[in-house]
Image (tube, rainbow, N blue to C red; front, top):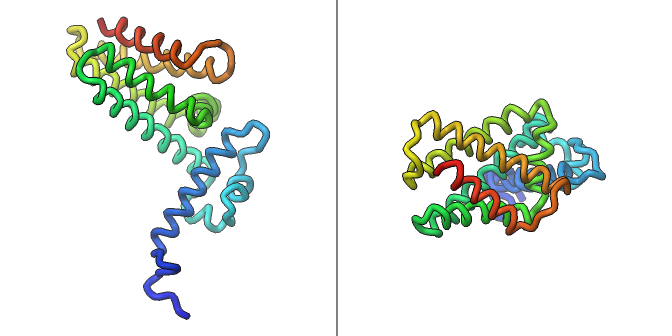
Amino acid sequence: MAVQSGVYRGLSAETRAAGRRERLLEATLAVWADADVSTTMTNVCARAGLSERYFYESFTNLDAAQTAVLEQVAGEIELVTHQAAEDAGTDPAARAMASVGAFVQMLVDDPRKGRVTIVEAAAMPSLRPRRADLLRHFAHLTAESARELDLSPRTGADHELVGLLFIGGVAELVTAWLDGAVEATPDELVAVAARSFLGLYH
């Protein structure tokens, strides 16, 4: 029977392609985070159960797939931290604890996301610029949050610089934690990071 209008088993061609892309993103995350497996397109395709033809349907190369994973995780971080802060009300301390807590819980729930976006991406020259862009983006969001809470009468430039200092510090702290260089519970990480935010902006 002929396939009508690109529909197969009730799914359009676009829907099927989007599903394959999601499988490839999940496979890229899994392979990239696994120290025992080489991060290659072949291994990603094998993990996804798809041929290289379908890989090229979604990505031009492996760097593009890894960049897409990096951006997907960054988008998730932005979403969960913003929502947690909003749910916490208007108290700066409560918002800081909730926002950082949501971020750390995300890493506890799926350590692979922290491993690839914070640690592994920093070691790759091809991804390092995009990772740096995302850190600056989160620094800007931090500065905006401080302004909204009316924390300290700093100039705009000072707000942005302090935001970058905070985000860079948190990234280094999480890197050390994921690498096992520092021993701390998730609650201890949250408390330290939240106090740092409040201290920097007061």
